Image (cartoon, rainbow, N blue to C red; front, side, top):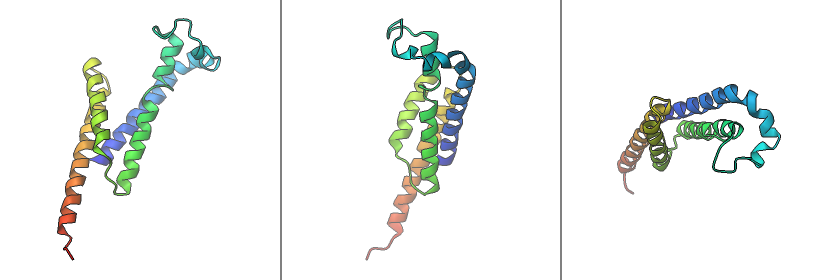
Length: 137
């Protein structure tokens, strides 16, 4: 279950990053590298198309979610149970976004979080059982 959660996080991270870059970077990359993000005419309360495109792509959640997915897969391959707080945090975030923006891919984040938490719980149960099975000296 943990591996599937990691794979879904990686899929969402890659999918969001690649698709958003393909859709908006060609139109806004020149402005990003031209310093427009450092001095927005509209201030911080309104977003220009260039600023919105930045937060959708490079400044968005795709790359951190990709890193999380790879970290979860890395821990799983080494037999390390990832911490439950990550799953609860991602679940709260993705559930709120699913409610706000349905239909959308956010529901996959909810599914991945539930799989993650179930896998962490199963791993903790297995570790307890293994510890209890070791004879005392």
